[in-house]
Figure 1 (cartoon, one colour):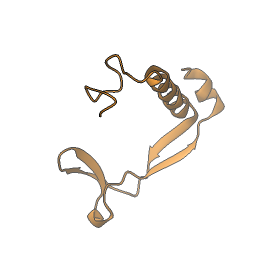
Figure 2: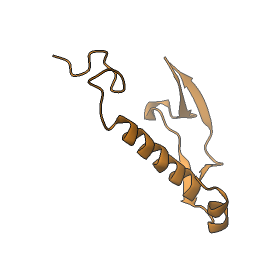
Figure 3: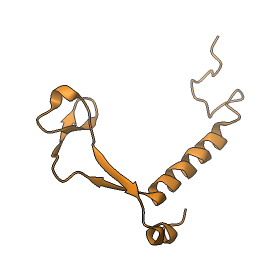
Length: 86
């Protein structure tokens, strides 16, 4: 017997009671992550698109390594973090 008749956790009388909480929690986590961390591409690595069913990033010349998107991460400057409030 399936718990969710339609297969969706957000619809129906048997929907997940924590669905909206979990959705808000992940939004808050992403907001804090984007605010406090700077993301940059490595200038020495060339990324190409790889199309199967969906488009995915791949390091040029290394298709045997699979889908990759190497990023440089560092803590955002305090002034920049203060400007970008969630």
